[in-house]
View (cartoon, rainbow, N blue to C red):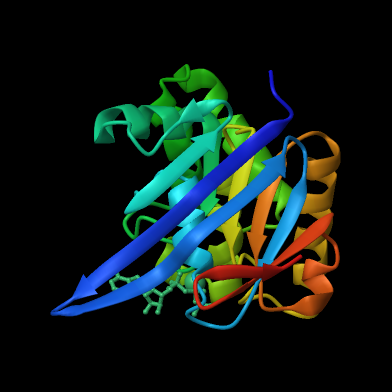
Length: 225
Ligand SMILES: Nc1ncnc2c1ncn2[C@@H]1O[C@H](COP(=O)(O)OP(=O)(O)OP(=O)(O)O)[C@@H](O)[C@H]1O
Ligand SMILES: [Mg+2]
């Protein structure tokens, strides 16, 4: 078991738009240790979500290698990646991506179903996770019946319910008021202290300061730490 959890090696992601090549990431190399809590900051369009998607195996680099938890993931098939994600990664997407026809509780139960957990244990675990993010009283509501900040916390509960070794969170507090944002960041700190590896994208400097380390991106490159 190596100390390095995430190892991006010269990772480039190019989007082709008509005849134009857009470099979302330019030969980015970064290493994140097991149990490290890293914040990624940088202007809009600097490549933060692109990097997070590559670490999570949601997207593949145009060139370079992505190693996560000792495995090279950029060469895996879609099927193998889907399976790998279930056991390694929890993701909070920038725009939540909750399933609209499922209640908060059902959304949080889903990752356990996909992993094939026994039915009996799922509901109490989903409930406990929702309570942990402060949504104990909202479990039976649909996403459309929840505020933006509440939906965001459902997405966090869903990302954490399988207790993945790695949590990737794209602006997980962007829709929260100061008090709720602070309690979510405290939760992330607690998880990191318990050994989870966390990659957090945020615009808010005071939230980034809660991390062990800050990576600064600009124009598809890491320009500072
Ligand atoms: N599917 C896509 N097709 C073409 N270009 C894309 C695509 N996704 C992202 N880009 C471009 O890649 C660059 C990096 O995008 P990315 O979403 O990683 O930025 P970001 O740092 O997360 O920004 P924000 O803070 O606004 O979320 C941007 O210039 C964006 O326009
Ligand atoms: Mg983004």
